[in-house]
Image (cartoon, rainbow, N blue to C red; front, side):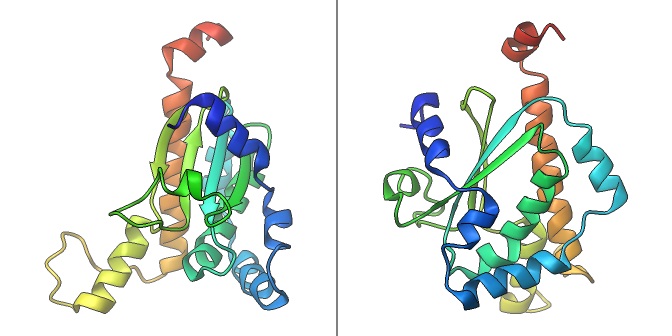
Length: 190
């Protein structure tokens, strides 16, 4: 069960981004590093994230070997680094933490990356799936063809930038959720 105590314990077992990447092979670390070097928040994204005032703990169930993880987790790191006072990011290996990954299956599978957004008290706030909307649209267009009947399924010209924006949107949504929490507003007097 995803209690605050359980999630806090899992978060404490998690690794910061650089330490997590270091658990991989040199080839895996290079793959993650190549994407990390290509990602940059736009000024408006950086300004938005730096305005976050309520603490978010972000726990990522991941696989250092995973292509989707190497393509998206560097984005999460860039977002977290834009406001380390408000965003604490940790990674756990999906297979080493099967007790967690089995509770957060998506479509019946242990997908990675799966991002859990937690309050400052480690209460569950929300979950984002292994692929952002822009990434899913691009994959659907490639896999299902141009006639894919998905509303708005046009593949973005710059999938990396669109995927980064999707993640920034997820972080903003979760920040607003904790920022507007009556319990936390009462605690912080705001």
